[in-house]
Structures are given as C-alpha cells and as structure tokens.
Image (cartoon, rainbow, N blue to C red; front, side):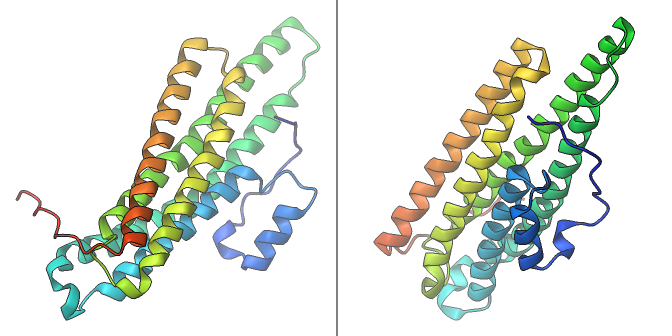
Length: 228
C-alpha cells in the first residue's frame, strides 16, 4: 500500500454528483480508490434490488410474494446506505494507514511505535473492505430471493444487481488481501483470508443462481413464512 498525505474525509462521497465522484476517482489523489469504488458498486447493486422490489410491491400478479417485497424494500435501502458509508470508511482507513506510515522512525522507540501504528492501521484497512464483502453477500442474497418472485419486466435488473455484488465483493476482497501481510499476525491473516474467500464464493454462487433463474424465466413458489 503506498503512503499518502493528509486526506480530507469530511465530505461524504454520497454528497457528490456521479460526475464529481468519477472525476475524483480518476485524479492523481489516492482517495477515493478501489475500496471506495467497490462499496459504491455494491450500493448500486442494492439500489437495483430495491427498485425491483418497489416495482413489484402492490402488484396483484405478485401478491403471493408481498411479504418478501415488504421485507426487501427497507433491507435494500439499508444496504444501499451502508455501502455508501463504507466508501467513506474505506477512505478514512486508508488515510489512517498513510498517517501511520509517515510517523517518525529515527529512534528505536519511534520505530516500535510506528510499527505498532502500522499494524493497527492495516487492520482497519483490512476490516473495512471485509465489511463490503459481507454486505455484498446480503445484497446478492436478496437478489436471489426476488428472482422469479418479482416483476418479470425488471428481472434483468436482478442479474445486474447480482453482477454488481460480485464486482463489489471481489474488488473489496482484493483490498483485504493486499493488507494482510502488514498485520504482523500470520494466524489472523490466514483466518481473514479464509473468511473472505468463503464469503466471496458464496456471493458468486448466489449470483450464478440468480442469473439462472432470471435467464430461465422461472416462476418460483413463495418463500416459507418466517417463524413468529
């Protein structure tokens, strides 16, 4: 991970226009970077899931799935907002790592303090994209549930949502993996790697199932009612 200077994270990415965010992403500044882009992609996937649920709610043709639509709408909205917040969190974590890298290292004490600060900051820069991986699984799980149980005219949007979830997940996972060597803890690094890989595999499996249902045009039975 390269060192960075002071980063102003007081302005949230959600408050930018799309063009402003893209311009910032393409600039020579280190933030926003891949972690923020991953979270934004995940937010778009969640928004698409919410759109499909909203386009299905209240339609007599899909009345058997009303409970699913009613649950999916607020869930997708929460995930959409969470992913946007994770974009900012990633930028802050990256800034913290950069600050740790710039700590003085003239004396043995300073070197020890800097090394400890780097390990702590690296953990933050690892756990932040891991949250994006976890949220991506929630998004694609909703997309898979809605496939075949929602407005067929918007079914392709569920496949797009699933693909966006895979992109967000794998992009965020790349940021997890790049930071693991800086943790200074091989056992924890291995655990985080295995957890991330397991989550990413689950995301890809659900995305594939969503695609199969959407492209096959299957009409699915309602989900079992949740226990009271």
